[in-house]
Structures are given as structure tokens and as C-alpha cells.
Length: 386
Image 1 (cartoon, rainbow, N blue to C red):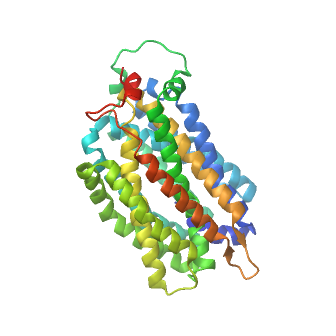
Image 2: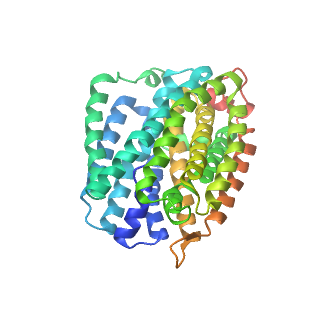
Image 3: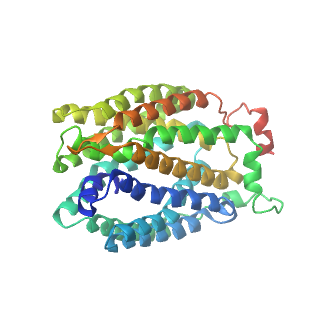
């Protein structure tokens, strides 16, 4: 959220290509994917609050290191360092919420969580761009790092210990047993493949959304905050609503229709020529609503494939898959997209077709996933329950 809106400015200031900017985005996600994988070995062995504090402090320090980076190479390194800690944070939050909220109500809970992205769009992104325009690109990272350190204090003071998953007596097992457990569970393997398809369908186009709006659609850098402000404003209201729909009508159904609708704004965004501002904002706002909305039932569905005792490890692997998929998507997109002599981003349409193909694949895979927290437990998930 902080890196992608700064794309046009960073590409201009550092004189880097779309491919090099893709590396800036993917360095965080590649590191996050690796750390998520490693975290799966121990995540269920500790109090979730203590883990949250450890990784949140590391994320904060890494973000401040980004603010102090004097050039492209050190910024690339600092983003990778930040990803080591940031990649585990999302899985921890989802594990805490999943442990606290029943599966039948989890769609609504995920909808509330997704409003945090809306607030980041409405307040965080425009304010970050304001800081970058008023000072320089270092300022948004410093603000985020300091704000994150203050939030660490809030977590330490107000979040209660999260040890419920430790109350069940479990036999000692090898550190790699979590991977063996997932590898022997076809339901969870399908869930991981499903989440990978969802993320690739999203992150193949998102890192280049801001640059394309400037280079292809005709927006100015000063108008970019409007994309995130208006899109985020809509999702504040739609995310909780979509969460309630997922609980009422089923996670599979809501995801299927949400993902199908997402194909339309993906096609429109990747084919936009110079257009009036209101058309650009309409297309991007619809994309924010439906693309973010599909993640709500998708995340709730995937979280329901693991038992509470093993959820932390599984969600760490889910985070690993998400981060590596987003890194791969942005990296491959950076190879495909080139900048023409007139400054336009070329071959963005090709990336759009790739995103659509993976979205269709995700719709198909979603039908193959069952949540073991429901009344019906698929045979292949029985080992996970016992």
C-alpha cells in the first residue's frame, strides 16, 4: 500500500525501469514468503500475542530503515528486511481472529478486518503521497515506522494473551511435522493452490496500477490519491456487507460471484486509454470494491480448513504462498511490461489477460475446498481433525 502509489515518483527519481520497480515490490513479498514458511515450524508453540509483538517491532524497525535508505540498492535491501517480519504479521492476525470467531461468523469478522485496508486507502495512502510531495519519498516510510512502533505499545497494553491453542495436550513431534501434515491433507493443498491463484489474479496488475493511471490513462501524480481515497471510501461500507453475505449465503457462493465480477474492472483497467477523471475513478473504485471483496470469503474459507491447534502453522504457510505468489506475479508482470518511447506502459493488456485467467482458475478451485469447522468434514481432512 505504501510502495505502489509511490511508483511513478520512485521510477522517476531513481531512473529505474518497470522491471526494477517490480523488484522493489517483490523484494518485500519474496522475503515475506520465506519467513512465513520458516514461521510455520514454530508458530503454534508460542503465545500468539508475544509472536505478534516480536514481528511487529521488527516490521517497524525495517520500515524506518527504508526511510533512511539513500539509494535504490539500499532501499531494495531494507524492503526485503521489512518483509521478513511483515510477512508473518498477516498470518498472525488471521490466526488470532480465526481462533476467536466461529466459522459461521467469520465472514463478518474478515469483512471488518478488510476495512483496515480501506482506511489505509482513504487516509494512509493520500497522506503518504502528501508527505512524499511536500518533503520527499523518505517521509512516508518514517511516518509509518514511527506509527507502527506506537501501535506496538497499544498491542502490548491492550491485547490479552492468546494461549487457547496451547491448552490442548499434544505429543511431541518433529519441527517439520506441520509440513508433513499439510502435505498429507489434499483439502489444504487445494486451499493453498486456490489462494495462490487468487493472489496472482490480483497482484499481477496492482503494482502497476498507479504508473499505468499516470502513463496510460492520463492522470497526474497529484490526482493519484483520489484513486485510493474514493476506492477506500466505498470499501469501508462494502467490506462488512460482503462479509455478512458470506456468512448468510456461504463463502463459496459469494466468492464465485465476486471473483466473476472482478474480471470486468481488470479488463477495463488494463485497457484504459487517456480518459476523463470520472471514468478512471469509477473503474478503479469498482476494482477496489470487488477485488477486495472476494478476499473476504476466500480468507474465511481457507482459514476453515485447519483445526485451531494447527491453524497458526497452516496460516503461516498460507501467508508464505500469498507472498511468494504476489512476488512472482509482480516480477513476471515487470518483465512483460515495458515503457514505450512516449512514456506509456506497453503490454499491460497482456498482464490483464493473465490476471483474468488466474481469476477463472480460482473460481474453479474454490468449489473443491471444504471447511472442517462446518458440519460436513471431507474424508481427506479427517486426519487433520484427529
